[in-house]
Length: 260
Image (cartoon, rainbow, N blue to C red; front, side):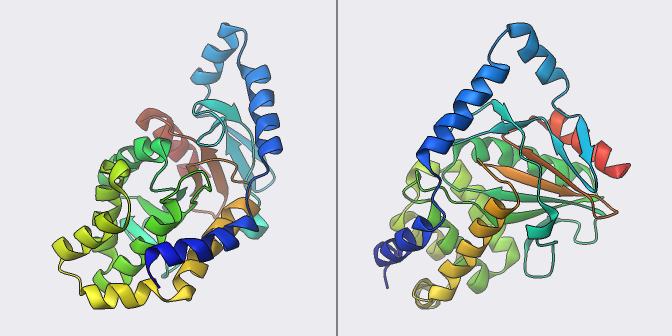
């Protein structure tokens, strides 16, 4: 199966979880009505963007719905603990694997807001040894190459390992407009990965199903836009946020996690 053929299979799978456009339009309208005016409310919202509001064992941060609505528009969708898979050995991890705080990002390689958050989270784990970063997939239907890029990344991980996966992620976010078959195969060649092994992996439907599982999970836990992030505290509490928050805002959440 080529990546083109894979896309046909993926389109069928994604249809089962596709976002309803009417719901998205309603969400967008609600977000704009609530936060769009007056300007003073917007300013106040930015000042408390890192604040955490607890509800039982989970919490939510003033967040941004991103890609399919409008980047920077706030919304509130607390993570549902029952549908969330805690980080384990099957995940792609950057940073200290023994860190007490884990930032689980559900991301889309073609999403511009994910592209903005990527260097921010890179800096977070580089500067904080108690924080690890886990990458999971949230490819949106509106992005033609998002699902194929996710599948390619999984095949690159299988053939090259965790470090090469993260090299691909860095390269993909730095070259989002180049995503596609040629880009994937070019990266595989430069990384020294066996092209035959890579092609065999692309033909394995289980890989696409694994990406689909991530997508099902993030929707189940409350993700409504990309990127969607769940910060797992040392005591196992979940602190979600959505959107391309700044380094300072993310660190505000991390500080809250350290105390929970």
